[in-house]
Image (cartoon, rainbow over all chains, first blue to last red; front, side, top):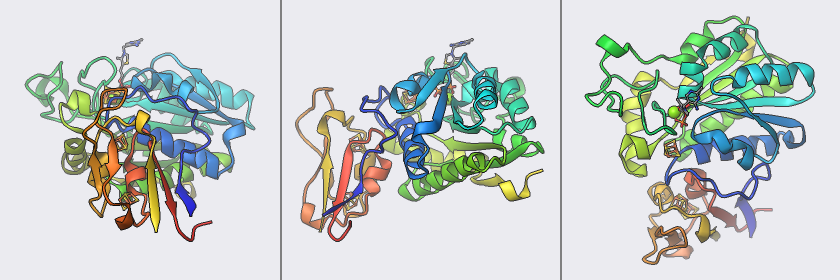
Length: 248
Length: 71
Ligand SMILES: Cc1ncc(C[n+]2csc(CCOP(=O)(O)OP(=O)(O)O)c2C)c(N)n1
Ligand code: SF4
Ligand code: SF4
Ligand code: SF4
Ligand SMILES: [Mg+2]
């Protein structure tokens, strides 16, 4: 019998600290599978962010830097410009990327930095205990919107992918989900395309992955899959908003 | 013929593999592992088709899948 699925080499043997059913683990694995398949492990540098994935440097078996909250795209810019032969990616949550780091991500995309961003949107600040994020859905209950997000005082959730895709500097922007095996496959394909854009020197690439935080959503992992499918995708449509061919 | 194996010590009992299995052959064990979770297991391996849907969904990289006829 031959192996059809095993742990990718670009993951260390370290056990993930994530909660049961947290999709960070699926997304880590997909990034590692892509690095394996494209043969990039030896020349990749990961930029970890602040959030539940703060220990990403322990999980990816590549060189890594842990950036200050929201600043991963700026750190990645410096690393990539000084080591253009390296493959540089950031791994950021929605609080990190869309809130405190909004300026950094917009300007890295606007400058067309040749980096790849893995953007994990779970519509909440997971690490700090489930506060409202810029991406929290209208009506979604969080510790800081116990009555549900009210757009009258909290505004509307930001569709980062659509917004970034308006920038001429952005080359590849896609939104995917990992709520079932078919979508896991599509997410892997998008992550692969994003890294290929960087390998070919074609500029800024980002994959936004809709991701479950069962703990702070107060759902079981299986219920969380349904919530992504029925609630999140309704506001955050899946698709490719920009491909390298149509960039500029 | 196909075979799935679980690194039981890594399993957090989230049931995403069970939910994904098209053959309905994954169940949670009645025992608990060192982390205190009921780990996933296969009830009837002869029904496994080696699709690896379980492994694709597993957030903790617990599962390895082998299949007859694959290099
Ligand atoms: C400068 C600074 N401000 C605030 C915090 C507190 N903080 C830690 S993680 C986090 C948000 C994490 O949310 P997200 O990026 O969505 O990641 P998740 O945990 O949901 O994956 C915040 C506000 C911090 N660590 N540093
Ligand atoms: S709090 Fe949420 S995002 Fe953080 S590890 Fe737990 S499930 Fe994952
Ligand atoms: S490989 Fe497919 S059939 Fe076999 S246990 Fe996993 S999901 Fe079920
Ligand atoms: S998906 Fe993985 S962690 Fe979750 S129950 Fe199945 S084997 Fe265990
Ligand atoms: Mg988050």
